Amino acid sequence: MNRIASNLRLMMQRPPRQQYAAICYRAKKRGEFEVLVATSRDTGRWVIPKGWPMENKRAHQVAEQEALEEVGVKGKAEKLPFGFYHYNKGLDNGIKVPVRVQVHLLRVEDTCKEFKEKGARQIEWVSAEEAASRVNEPELKILLLQFAEKMRKPVQDLAVTNLAIKATG
Image 1 (cartoon, one colour):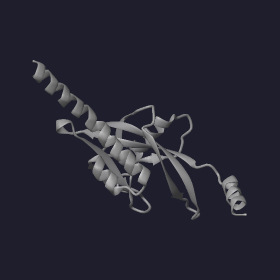
Image 2 (image 1 turned 60 degrees about the vertical axis):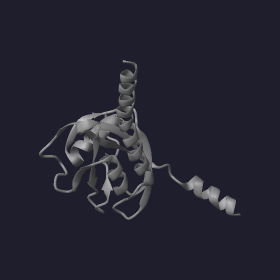
Image 3 (image 1 turned 180 degrees about the vertical axis):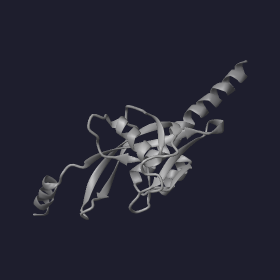
């Protein structure tokens, strides 16, 4: 009986809704990187810019648009997703719906003094590790830590290459 009830629940579940997001980042001195986090407008929790699909825009273009509107940064998002995370979105009517967020990396090229949601959010540049400690969604925490590792790796590879050149040179 429990198996039947479980199967019925699964059959009645709708697939998660889709959103697109950006991990906005910039280079600092000495090969370090920072990511941009912002507070949500409703609960004040730390998030990355994200939004619903837009007509005539591909996923990475939606991520770019959301970054511009929500945190006032311009840049090119990578076309291929960096990863995904899931969360439950509270709708205006009080219902919570499951959402799958496709995340794209966006290297920030410029910041805007004026943007759509200026003043509605607190915005901070922090290390990826700090960003991971601030966000609530476990899968987003993992993505931010994976980003930190990805960005550290080229610097480590370069250091190893330089050591090898010195040793042989």
